[in-house]
Length: 323
Ligand code: NAD
Image 1 (cartoon, rainbow, N blue to C red):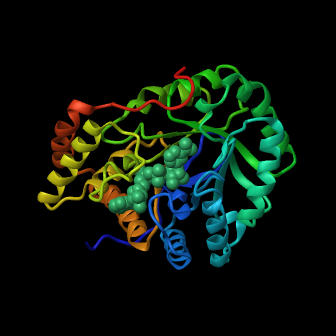
Image 2 (image 1 turned 180 degrees about the horizontal axis):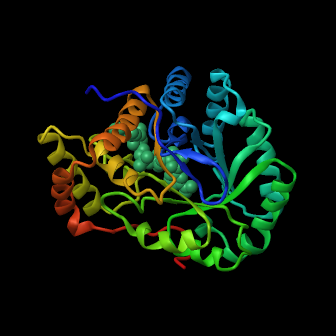
Image 3 (image 1 turned 60 degrees about the vertical axis):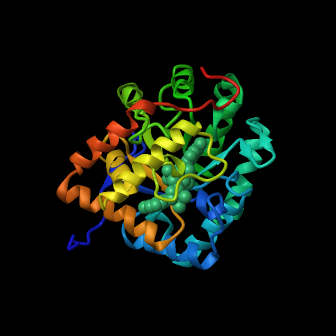
């Protein structure tokens, strides 16, 4: 398209001092969560991401039952770049065999993650999907355990993740300022659901960095559609597929539109998108570069928003509480 090749925009992450690429590499697909991925393809995708300026890589022991962490470790090692040139986040408390946010488990978990990732430390360790645990345990036991890991130099910053937005205010209102550095929200800043927006001023007032994951709504906003396990209602799935088909008919791409929608809000430090191929990396970085030069495709966006209006902000239940 004749767009100049330049490094991706970096954005500050709350008060951490970290600067994250505005497009982040979600490594759950490297755990075969969206279908099988070969080691060769994984290495090529991560290499291309780094080449195009992506410096932020997110994984979890849960993704693919530790496979994503192992694959990310192998790929980062294959890159052979200095450790301070990339930022890695992983998670604790959610595993293939269930949830355990106890101090003992998360303390053991980081050592296992570091071994799989072949790293001495991770930049961010996040309590994974805390709505499935006791939020009071997160406040009183898990986060204090993570503070000890910070002091031990195994992690640099502490985060929490999950779907219902109320979990973030619950925890942040109960921990001393500066304890939780980052929140990771998902599926709440996409064209079909933008409810995270209302929380951004609060998060800013708390000095917390914001990562917004799943800009493609975990596959809803793609031409191929979501995986089998996707928790959306049949109505939400079919309406998103109608929007994708509408874009395709117009010669547009719903995923590009969705990336640009999420990237437009600069209070979000990084838009974390799951990728498993060189092509997806190039398309998503290309969406960011094009946005920086030409702005959003407002006309197509308005048309797609009209199609999605009947399901706007529709979500699904997650966890054992909806606080
Ligand atoms: P996503 O919305 O990023 O969608 C990923 C899907 O879209 C995959 O099938 C991917 O192959 C495909 N895709 C990517 N780019 C595409 C393009 N340009 N065109 C067409 N298809 C494309 O959903 P996600 O992967 O679930 O979320 C991103 C990342 O955020 C995850 O990998 C994970 O690291 C993180 N995340 C964390 C949590 C949590 O902590 N609870 C939850 C969800 C996601």
